[in-house]
Image (cartoon, rainbow, N blue to C red):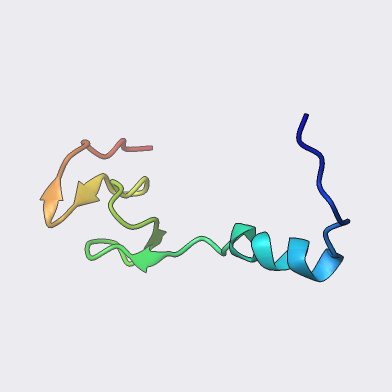
Length: 60
């Protein structure tokens, strides 16, 4: 059975995990209603995506 010869130091372990950090969510502005929206998603406020109305807006 394979057994490591030496203990892996915490700095080497941390360097291996350096790319695993959680990055903040990127937001863009909706061109129709100027609300913050996740890129490449339909706006949840107005229902527009790439200059077209995809989902009809619900009137309250």
